[in-house]
Image (tube, rainbow, N blue to C red; front, side):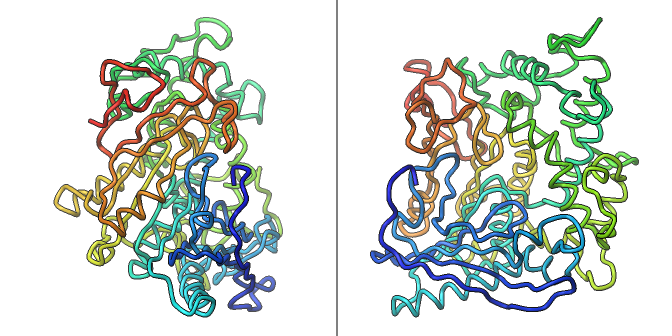
Length: 497
């Protein structure tokens, strides 16, 4: 991690629950890493995407290019493939979505099986079980963590949730719907990226900054006050309308209508929102943003929705992901991610999501803690969805959930990392301090990853920023505001208000 060695440890690998499924052999693969100088803590690393591989169990979950991880801090760490292998992620007859139990393992049951096994392994290895247990991940790993907070509130003391796709079936369906709408704008048929080009996205990003950058008291290339920005920026008013050819200096009327509709939330034919709205943020100009919007729907979302989330799945023998992404009915996708069929006795919206997302009363009652972060320019899982979840959690707890759950928006950050953002931070250490010493977390200092950064350079950083810019990430609903004096590159010049 960051070019430094990890401490001496024992690596244990294995499989659990081996079985013959409807279309092949399945097992839950895992690895555990048990450090020689163990700190008494356990970290369950939950992984991203559609799983299918046992990621190295280091417990690296802290934004972009983290400088430390749970293993380096002395945790025993476990990682798993959630019950299927990489070949079973591919479209076709071998896809794990054709096996009902594999779906359930991916959704939540593998986490429920691996955690107790890892604790037993720790007991066998050290002669004592963990003093404290933590779970965390980003993207689908954030989903796993938030599902565990709901389904397994007695298993962990701390939950670290990054850019959570806890409504993943809805998000993937909405991304396909948005992709189909971008295709209608495409100047090159079949290439969605030509419906909203890099130049046009930079144009909109600059317009967002012109309206929203100074709302926090500093013109610094960051939209810190995301909530105020959404009320301030208007695509129709703030971006020029083309009177001639598209040249990157304007948007056509059709582009404005379609893109504004995507940002407000893709809907079904009767106007029902499929997933969530999206914050206007200058992070939409990046290559990472365009990859998720214009490439992922045909190669990843199509397989996930068509074969893993729909009940029943598409015909595996004839399924073609890019064709599905371009032509599938949004209405039908929505119906089938909420449906059961035959052996598929749980819908995707049942097995992939927390059963009651805003009821964490059992977790709260145990004294467990939750820290959540989400990049405001995440192009696949919307920060608006996480904000809505946290608002519901607050309402369910008398208007304040901050005594057990804290939410941090990361301005400008794309999906788990990147974007024009200070995306390098450590939330595991404050989570541990909260759980074990009762130190309630406030601002978390985040750094830019400019030239020379030990965790790797973030190619999306504006040239005008210091390579070592820092900012406070504030617990929602607070916003980092400029104090009026001091360097714009220094977190100390800002306060959470």
